[in-house]
Length: 169
Image (cartoon, rainbow, N blue to C red; front, side, top):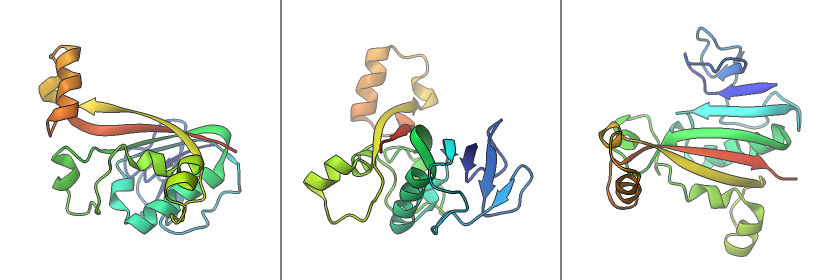
């Protein structure tokens, strides 16, 4: 089973569309802000979620990532796409919650890192992660070196943060 969480009107092909609203393409209406979700432990092969997590509060994000980990099979992946904190798009939608998403959130999803650095954080998940950026259109034709420098030094360079989380355990 593959889930597209918070799919809205843009469900990924081959995925079960999940949203809090009954929209065309939504297969399961569910409130993903609260646990438990309606899937058994280790029953999901893949999770995809684009432009949903930034609408959750900080506490709801913790629930979201803990539940993603719970329902994924060991070794399965979740692809999460959000606006990057450094792009105006992260602030443009008044329904986005604070704080905006930075690649730093990924270290908090790793149990070993949490145990050493923030044992008080209420995560139960354990992911290995990697990430990349969808660059702003203004950088489309620039050389790779210019793109790398822009992402590290300028706002409005990295439009979206694309994270891939692999379930450990």
